[in-house]
Image (tube, rainbow, N blue to C red; front, top):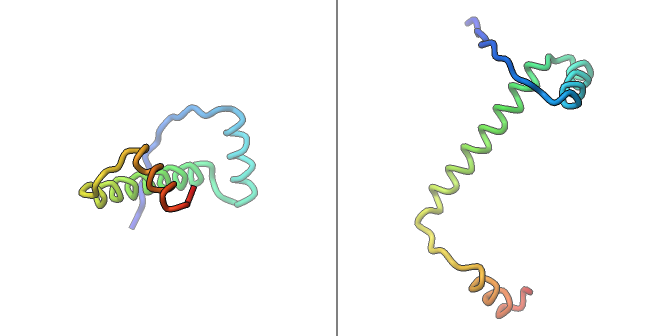
Length: 77
């Protein structure tokens, strides 16, 4: 199966671009591959965070002050 790519223009900080070019050369990969992997990684983390929020939505909330009181009472702080 042929995998087609979409072309996009992005503007990178010059130092970041320089680092990406060096890393691409060192790893024999393209800058596009590195950027695609980084974006994919960030989106995966976002998805995992959203799933964790959904799973914990029914949990009881506690105020910061109450949490501190509990930790002090348990001798943890």
